[in-house]
Each structure stands twice: as C-alpha cells, then as structure tokens.
Image (cartoon, rainbow, N blue to C red):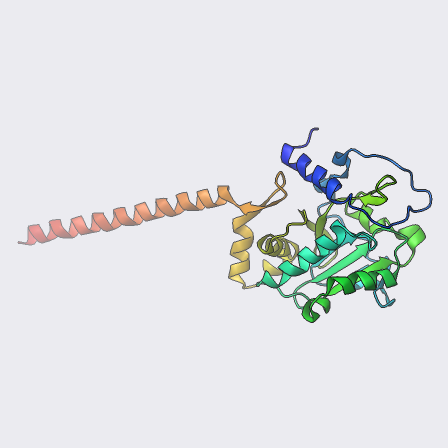
Length: 282
C-alpha cells in the first residue's frame, strides 16, 4: 500500500534531518545499508495501544538505576534519541522544552513526565548528563524530565524502540543514525497513545496529545474544558497532527440550527396565538 504524499514527505524529511554529522561509532555487528526513508515510517495502526516493557532497567544521567515502569503513573512524553548526535536529536529535545511552558493546561512533573532514552547501545549515563547539560533546561522542567540510557546495553538497547515501532539505521557514509523525529505519548499505564512528528513542535498539538494520553482520567473528571477540547479535535493520520473535528462540529452546528429554528418557530406561533386571542376578546 502506498503512503499518502504528505506522509512520504514526513518520512523523507526525518531521514534527511537525522543525517547531520555526528561522532557516534557504529555498534558491533551493525550492517551498513541505505534504507528507503519510507521503511522508517511508524505503523501507527499496529502500535497505538501497544504496551511498553515496563521492567526494562535504565540509568539516569546521575547513574541511578530505575525501571521504565517507575516513570509511569502519569502520561509520559517519550523521546528516542542518541547522545552523540549533534543535529536533530538536540534540536528535538530543545524544541520540546521551549514549547512545554506554553502548554498551560498541563504542568510537567505534576501532570506528566518527559523521558529521553538513547537507542544507541554505546551511549553512557555520563553522555546523557552532558547532553542534558547542554540543553540548559530550566529547573522547573528539569525536575520532570529524565535523560537515560538502557542498563543492559547488549541485550535491551533496542527493546523500547521496537516496542513503539521506532526504526533506525546506521549510515557509515555519514557516520550517523537515520531515524524518525517523533514524540511518543504514553498513557499512565504505559501504552502508546499518540505520535507527533517533526522538530517544529506546537504547544497546542502537545496539549491535545496529552489529553489523549490521559483520557481515562479526564473523561471521568469534571474538567469540562479538557473534555470539550478532547472531543472537538481529532488526530489526522495523513497529516500527523490534530485538526478540528469537522464532522462533529458540522453535526453540532446542524443540531443547534434545528433547535434554534424550533424555538423561534414556537415563539412566533405563541405570539401569533396571543394576538389572535386579544383580537377575539376585543
């Protein structure tokens, strides 16, 4: 099945954006290849709702061990990067932190967390710390954002990536990884809720994806604003972003028009009846 033109353009852009120079060393046993950018496209229909392996052990930037499951309990924005990348990975992380303060409905740490994990098994906790330091994250954001590597680098480095359909390839010519630039939104129980693509992020799109990720709580709460927002916007798979739910809005508009016509007709009818009654009484 062929991809819609705009989704193909997204896939091609990811590959080109990721091909900036880097100092990453090729992992042992890695086979050189020149992949068609389309095969890096995430099969969303397959992976939406898929659970992540919560038992995978990670090391944060200070070397502290923790499991992926310990980060859950709230929605998580997952970024898959590698720390020797000097191009799209740092751009993606930096673009996210610049947009997060604009997401006024949700606060990092309180309402959700951010987790950056390296898919390169050569990366270390010290490199994660240096990568995070260069981002110069504000204290409020740093408190809810963890940069980590997989503890068992030989056997589990690609486990998280494969569980969300994230595919990456080493390019010997460019000495860099080719990979998608994508945010993966996880539900509090660790399932894939949404993907947002590209390095040009938008606070409104992030907020809508967080509503999707936390819909179980929101749908049972009294937060009318989030409920209405979640219903009035829908995710466009062809464009890879949210848009107004036009069918719902059209239907609601037609319903409101019908109700208003019925009400106005009733008012006119009653007014006419009163006038006729007054004429008879005189």
